[in-house]
Length: 339
Image (cartoon, rainbow, N blue to C red; front, side, top):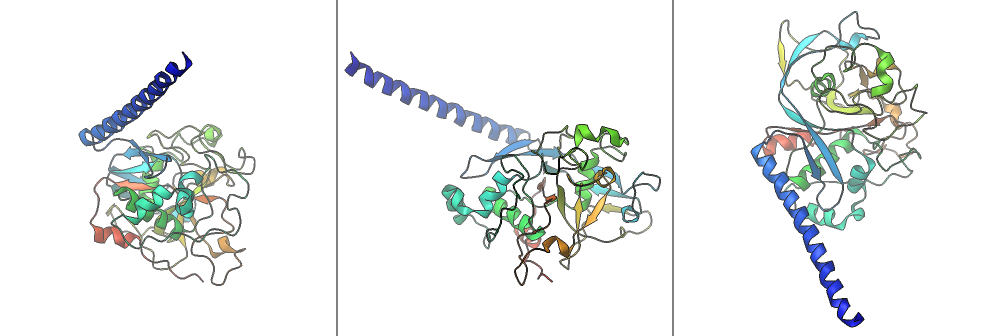
């Protein structure tokens, strides 16, 4: 009896495995078919060669008023003048890039399959960072937590790596795209209104964070389904920081982007776990600074890591209309030399 039962159990195990693979394959085909029939909808992507996934939210195009009115509580001078910006549709990460996602890029040995797929990708020149000399999470947690302490160049290089792996163009958001997505159709100081007393429902900030970042997506989303646009970790954008918006009178800026030509300062948005309520407003801006590498002992300092920016991470976007290879390459220039 026992000898006869073994082949039966083996057969059942194979059958169950085949059925599971078939179901997964059917689900993958269904998702692919849905993307073909509705190409501009939110989706979940698996990083090739891994089991790590990320979610992208469809952000419709439109116009909005960028900046803050003079009467807004907590307003700073660099948030003006108010102007109209027109934004093309794009996808944006549901939340900030996590350590699980970022460390596949930092440590190629974590997934041999991902590394092999990268080697066969059509985009050349993808470089990966030198591993950090200390734990860049500073013990605040990694599983489900936002990656921090990377330079803007490192964040852009992650985007280039992900673009090479997936064939879809991923990049950092422009400052205008970021504010447009944060507002999500609202005109108030925050995406939920003007009352900072409601921040506890939507954001991690100085008063409730217990002195550390928290797991992504653990607070309420904004009206477009994006989490942590207020607080948790501040986020890199593509733009060079200017102390005032540059525009002509009555001009509607279409997909504005202040292309950087120097290392500092770049625009950071969203506020963090270590910030006060006024720094989490949709219009609030912050300029990057060399002292974010203050404890880096290297000369010159690292192109990849900040040692003093435990409040800083990033999220990614993907434009609806993929640009040409030449245009894509323009986003991924070599790093500007450090000071």
